[in-house]
Length: 460
Image 1 (cartoon, rainbow, N blue to C red):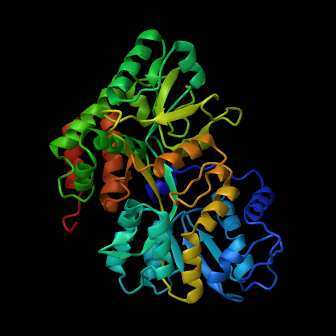
Image 2 (cartoon, rainbow, N blue to C red; image 1 turned 90 degrees about the vertical axis):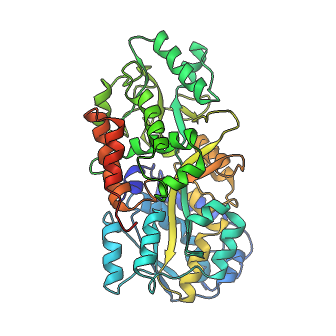
Image 3 (tube, rainbow, N blue to C red; image 1 turned 120 degrees about the horizontal axis):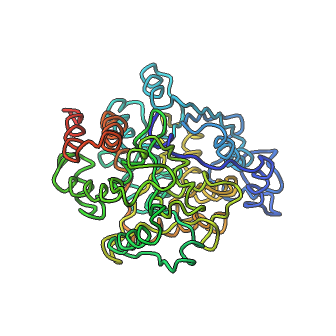
């Protein structure tokens, strides 16, 4: 199972009925609309679905790593498409998705559509099964060019051909904190990396019995992935996006001196006994602290800062308010200057293995604003899209709204999670394990990077 799916922990919808009501309200109208579904609900405006034609009696199979409870939110978002076209979506979520998808492709039993959570995995699928994966149809290409930035389109493109469009998205360049603690102590949100380090020093001096930072990288079989995010985020800041791209594609070695500089900067925080690990223990405790519980000390002020993605909001106690004036919130992890705005994130990609009209229609729907809005309405919080046609008013969480603003702001330079683009032997194995050893065993920076470089497949 890949790191992206393991690392995502979304809040389930409060009730399936409430989610469905939101979906239908989002596209309600007094018009009967068009479309092929004879029994389409009168509360659903089917005008936007006329382009897909009459698909009555047709079915589309979807295979994904998105399982319960998130799968309920997915299937709720398909209801308008099913009602207006007459098609049926057959959804299958599996925790063994990445292992089983190649098996199914090899056996000649592909799904119609799969949600692939790693651009690197997509590229390998295209390379290994060129006669099975299907290039995106024109309707999907048009949606991609209209509603997504060039960067997002490129992540679904292999050798110049668009195969996949983004499904969901997330932003990882965040630092969680307590607005009340900041106000009480007169702390200001840092706008540069140096400001962040100065704030860290101030907190360490003000609270000698606590620690500025808390962190945890334990995540079962995927232990270590949060540390990879740290290195990726810092490398974007110390070396810039062009070097980051070269590193991800192995144009420069994993242990390049510029990567070593970034890891040293990460260690300046995570391996500094004066800075970590508030409420949890010493530096080594980071390796055993569950990532989804590691920020629990922020409301109690045993720690004050925690670097984690927008989806970390799902892990806060239900009694806490996530808002700029609430109990917990997050600020953008600053760059080296206020004008330097790299942004790390991730997501999944819709990929087709059949070119039947109903499959192409559903793939187009999943790349449209109509689907993005239906999904946002069905989810409640903890999900967003990089689709510029998404109505931000449907995002019910302040941190989701902030994430959407950053994703659609051209002044930020977005880069996809590096480990998710690397070969599996590196990004989902050696990188995780060696970063864990870097913390747990105090393995040196150089040895850590050398070991990961040695794991890079010779053919990649």
